[in-house]
Amino acid sequence: MSVRILAIGKKHESWVAEGIERYERRLRKPFDASWTLLPHSAREGDAARAEESDRILAKLGRDAFVVLLDERGRDVDSPALSGTLQRAFDAGRAVSAVIGGAYGVDDRVRERADFVWSLSRLVFPHQLVRLIVAEQLYRAQEIAAGRPYHHA
Image 1: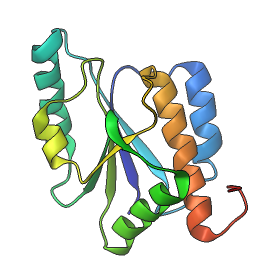
Image 2: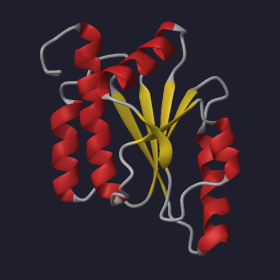
Image 3: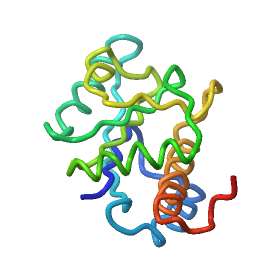
């Protein structure tokens, strides 16, 4: 088991890749992460959202615990996120985190999600979201293990 991150968009920009690699070197199973980058749609609006959602749904495992990142999701603290992920792992489920495209995802992806997570009520650029997710996975790992990285 590990965390599979599905993201719409191009490869990580260099500054993002450097930050992600910093955290990925520290991640251990089941919190280790792999990335699947899916291409943007050439369409706009609802058509782009539907096409990108098709791509995401095609990559999700049937039994995966799906975490959808969305500004309208639940705003949780890091210990709650760690607990959510740990419960999924304890239940024997792999975790897939989804970062949609510029137009978001459609209702099919939202309905497939087991947990809709908001990083903030603010909207962040996708590259920055990738880095934040990598850091939060590391933080969740450290919280689950009882190590002192997270100071409450």
